[in-house]
Structures are given as C-alpha cells and as structure tokens.
Length: 261
Ligand SMILES: [Zn+2]
Image 1 (cartoon, rainbow, N blue to C red):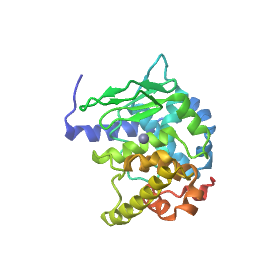
Image 2: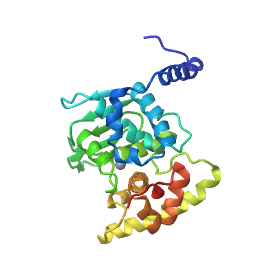
Image 3: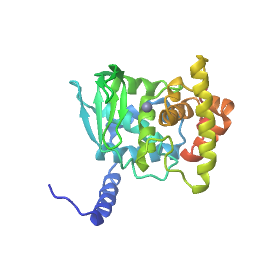
Image 4: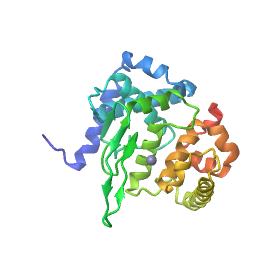
C-alpha cells in the first residue's frame, strides 16, 4: 500500500475530510442520532458540529466486530456520536490516537495472569478498554445502555474515550493536555483533593456521587469524573464545584445547564 510521507499526510487528510463533509449527511444515520437523549439536549450548533465530527471518525476508524458480532450503522453512529460529545468544546484532531474500535456483543472475560513475583491476577469481566497505543474495545450492550440512559452517571463510551484524551500525551495520569499552562496548578490541586476524598469514602464504604471505581488511580478518576460531568452535571456542580469547574474549563462545555440530575 502506498505510504504518504508525513509532510503530505496532513494536507491529504484535510482534503479527504473536506471532500467527505461536502457530501450530504447520510439519511439512514439520522434516526440513530435522533433517538440519543444527549443529542436531543444539545443546541442546534452543537448538533451540527457533532454530526460533522462523527462522520469523520466513522470514516477514519477501522471498525471490527469481535465474538461473532457484525458492526452495523447503528453501532458506528451511537459509539462515534457519544465519543464526539467529548470533543464539542475542544480544539481537537478527531482522536488522532484512535485508529481502531473493536466491538464485542457484551462483556468478555480477561484471563488472569502471573506477574514477575508469581502472584496471580484473577480473571476479570471486562466491558471496555482503551489501549495506550492501540484500539478502543467496547461491549456493545454496555455502550448502548450508557448512551440511552443519559442520567445514571455511567457511560462506557465516555469513560473509554476520556482515557484516550488522557493518553494524548502518552501518559495515563488523569491529566489530558490542558488548554493553558496556567490551568495546570488548579487542575492538579482540585483533582488531587477530590481523588483523596473519593479514596477515603471508598475505603469507608460511604456512598458517593462519583463511582468508587474512580478511586482506583488518577486515570480512572478522570474517566469516572468525565462520566459524571456529562451525565449528572448539575449534581456534580452542586456537590463538587471545583471539580466541575476544572472539567468545564477543560471540556469547554457546561452540561449542568443542559439538564441532568
Ligand atoms: Zn477506565
């Protein structure tokens, strides 16, 4: 296959995207979008931007069905639209670190392993994964459920693609590339404080707005906080205002004002 040199790749990509977006939006995709509750809550200009972004990623990502699943238009539209919700206020390059999306019908079992010390890591039931330099892997039933229940605070696709934003700089540290250098200190301070508070609550078994899974490490905290920000924005703003403010500044969106519990 012809490999374009880097200096040609970017103009070629821009040309290809422009040509794609000059075509009308595929009619058969509209019903899939229209049924998504989060899409219906967006302002018309945001809906338009989301439609453009999702067309680019649907065209550029390689979609592979696993476990006997055949990826169809509904899966592509629902997954891509949910992923692109994160991009609406960002200056972005369409998840340049995502080239392949693998879709399983439902969760799968990840066999346990032995580490260097000979200790076994137990088998795990997995619904999604975002590899550092690799694909995003999703269970379709969980991805679909997350997209259609926009207020329960759980959304697998938002979670995994938040990991991909975090990984843009190559580090899974819960800090995606921020808009400005000056944002780093308040981000670090708010995230650390909130992570510590969640860890303490999780240790004590206290119920929290943020899922206890966020206490696993800072990368999971960012992914879990992203789910909550988009799905339960008003509650997050009320109970964790500084966390909400940092996510609002980063994502350039204010979901608390779009409704949500
Ligand atoms: Zn995660």
